[in-house]
Image 1 (tube, helix red, strand yellow):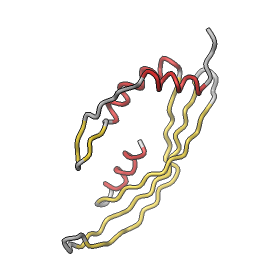
Image 2 (cartoon, helix red, strand yellow):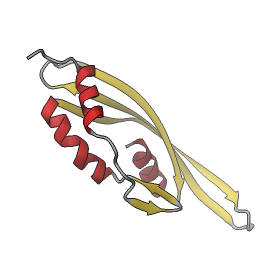
Image 3 (cartoon, helix red, strand yellow):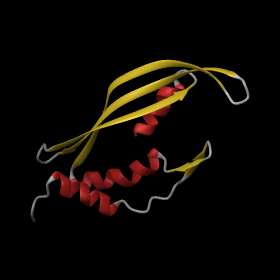
Amino acid sequence: MEKLNIYQKLLEVQKKVMGLKKDKKGFNYSYVTGDKLLGFIKPVMNDVGLLLKQEVVNIEKERVQYKTSKGVSKDEFLYSVWCKFTWVDTETGEKDENSFFASGMNEYEKGLGSALTYAE
């Protein structure tokens, strides 16, 4: 059997992980939870020999003060997060690195959690 390169392996993952239905609702959004996605994708990644390494490269925090449409004063933090996601072929060591940016704003540390969730 011919050995697959990293992009062929990623295609195999893509072909096998289809039709994930949104399983969670919150804040007027429907979405697929990370747990559900990982439950589908990890077995396929294991089968083809791929790892996904996630790194936070940089975080910036900025205090934002504003008034809501109802005139209520708010004081929140805007987090800007730069991440790097690296696919690694465990058989060959071949890598595919991808930079990603996400931001989140909420009360105090919740903004960081939001940004990291968006990045995921």
